Image 1: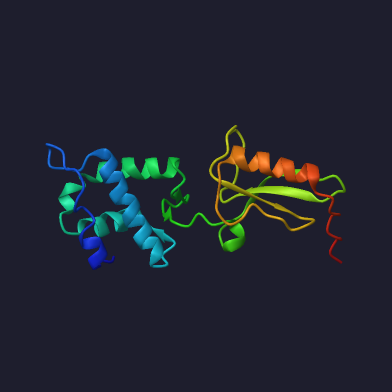
Image 2: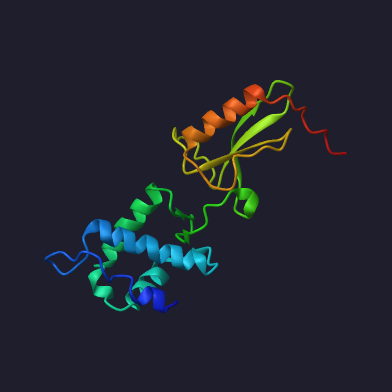
Length: 178
């Protein structure tokens, strides 16, 4: 838990409603600022109780509202792909590509013109009965080694980019390991 001078003013200048708490948008902005600060300290994950304790250690923390509000806003942050939740309940702050140290699960393989494959990967396994992607995705070509970069994107955008690359890539598949 960190209380630093930049966080001492986390709630300053934000709109407080008639109930004495921040309006929803300002509370969400404050939460995102807090998560960015924690991420900037090099911390990749935090539990919800640790985040709540950190939030409550700040001056004017009562302006944020209840723990239920925190959980609601964390759900919004997850929907907005600002954070991910691990199966253990930990809040994953890094949204980097799996090649940067995160977990990796291949969701789709697209075959290129000359046999290489473009893999669409995600940080979480794809649940069998689920029809929609469980989170943000990345792609990489096994032939020419092109990638979508280190920032996650919406699955539909990644699928379009990966399909376009698979259509135009002329790389051969990697030779088998012996």
